[in-house]
Amino acid sequence: MKRIHIGAAAIFTVILFLAACSPKEVPNALNWQVKEFKAVNQENEPFTNKNLKGKVWVADFIFTNCTTVCPPMTANMAKLQKELKKEGLKDVELVSFSIDPEIDKPSIMKEYGSKFEADYSSWHFLTGYSQSFIEKFSVESFHTLVKKPENQDQVIHGTEFALVNQNGKVIQMYKGNTGFPLKKLIEDIKIVRNQ
Image: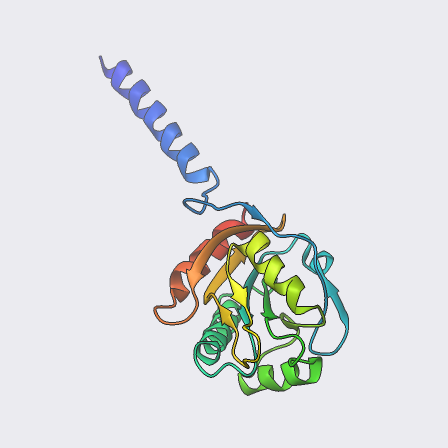
């Protein structure tokens, strides 16, 4: 009888060990493939999806003339960058796509990022494509609306942050404005990095 108990305990211990070692996954992963893009960064240097190949990254959609949601979104991205450094997650990239590329020239994007103390070594402010491209790209890759009404200076857009894995797939979306879940996003970044 003792042998049975010892055997059962050993099997239970092995199961627990294997469960602890198995890779965790982000719940309800979206797995949306990010389409190819060509842009320039805040230094007016070419930047494409190839620059992010094999890397974990977080993306958002902003514009520098935004008077409502973009400043708090960019402040939250700055908080994320600081937290990533604090956690030693130096290989995670941040990408802010301009959704008003005709206005947001590289120098304007750089000036905007500097207001939030952006570290440009891992945070890229992208522009240099057409308005029609970014409106199509945002929907096809991130399932988020971007629309600039005619004769207006404000752009309609979603406020979520997207976590993208090493294979260029959107894993999850997070509130980027109010109720920003910084702790949860950091936890999920760690899971994706270890996959």
